[in-house]
Length: 162
Length: 276
Image (cartoon, each protein chain N blue to C red):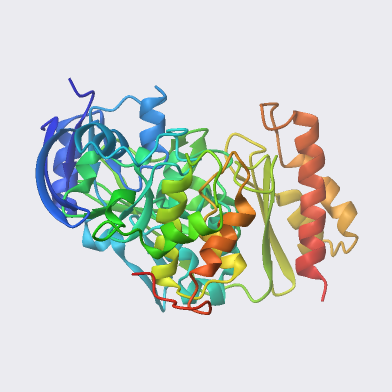
């Protein structure tokens, strides 16, 4: 059985083919081989959420996933949200609500929030807390983060997150 | 040099063949315990056989036998599955106690029981629901009760080359309320210090606990007092749980504290399901 695995996937809309070592984590692959360092390593055991990315639209702790498991999947990282140099609504909302201090948890927070708003455009506070339950913020910006996500709800102004 | 090999399978026959090739090959589903355990040195594996894309392991269905939960079905799918929410909400409640939203997107019920932590949150409700574990190997299939499945901390009846294909929650579903009460160090994400499932079935009750013995355990003494002897002093009944458990001291709580917490949670559970 092979210890090197060929994977076909898309990253932020671009198709890619790579050969990866079987024991390489998706997180390390994203940061060190795709050179997308917006995705952060915090705990590396699935507790903090700094490394959350979207796999086929679903939040996943990339530290708990193998790069080999990326085969056939669509990967979206924080770098894939801006369009033509313009930040997306969730990113803007985090800035508008000062939803961070150090910013280390922010990419993971935004990816979780983004997935939530895709599956539930009008989340309640409880929905937001549930969706972000895997994202820890050591600065304690939780109130501002919740407000930022709520401001992207369909009940608030423009609604759509694209 | 990578420490292990990886192969994705699309059918069970292929998985059994690969599991046979390497006696240190292990099935990979959600990987939320496995990847951490490998990196931390808890598990040594020669190969990970990815079973997530095998169609029959993704079954989640309710039929006349009960509810069948395939080994690759994520906890979030289980939690939002209508027949589970309607008929056995205690299972959804306990699955919701595992990890965080993003972890539950990948983690599976079968993985939770195969990891065989005495503190596995899904186990106590499965005991109360008398779940059956469907196991397949290269030559034959077998089914064991959930209570027979666990044999010790991190140990199950699974033989090398076998894997869990699904868990069945059999009919008839319990008529009555069920609760899973988890005592942990924080109100947020943590392993259970003590986990207690209390499920009413008509006028009877089923009680099971996690994190208080080498495997999850049924509270037979408490069940007997209530079901056979008609005990309705819930505090008195709950005290008997001390005969059913053998907790240890670890970083989540002392042996004495676990005895105390188990009694308190069993009493609260009885109050919540047996009254009203």
